[in-house]
Image (cartoon, rainbow, N blue to C red; front, side, top):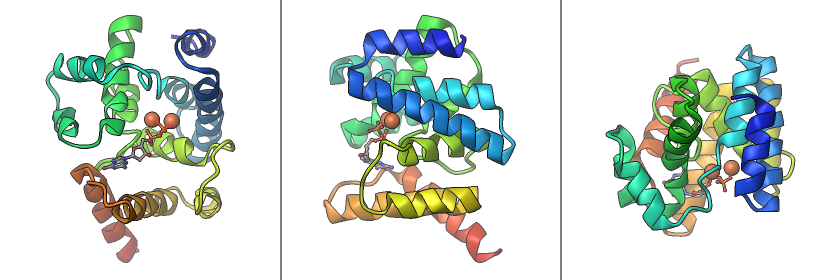
Length: 190
Ligand code: DGI
Ligand code: FE
Ligand code: FE
């Protein structure tokens, strides 16, 4: 699928605000890929598509997630805000025949992160958080980190997300902790 086609597709599916966010994540992801030696085209495509399932109903999301075997099924036991990520990957695979597993994985884990994140996982995870339209406490710190070092920025984002969830007394998906723990270790050993 070409980026223009993806843009046209999400324009039909998503409300204006989410469409603008997706285009912005796509651009930010392309920029990060260029900076950190990733595949720019793939990063832009993954960014464009990452939230494609954001407005499907919970029943639809659940059915899509269960339609394929996968280690992400456990997200159904956590916040329903997590569900659009794996469901989106399943949707683009079925609907557009996208079979690039690197791209699909980056979509699946764009909300939570995971252990052993690939370069593309990190780029999409970060681009989603720091795209210029985002405005929440702490985002500027992560933006600055993203200009210096990718892992430092991803770690900071994980830390802020976990703290936010704890402050709201919400559950934290274990893969988010796993991603955080792994990066903290790597950091300490630097
Ligand atoms: O889809 P977006 O709004 O662009 O961004 P997202 O996919 O990162 O956001 C989904 C929301 O999920 C975000 O507000 C944080 C929330 N969330 C709920 N439980 C968890 C969680 N995020 C993580 N990383 N881990 C959780 O367990
Ligand atoms: Fe999302
Ligand atoms: Fe997003």
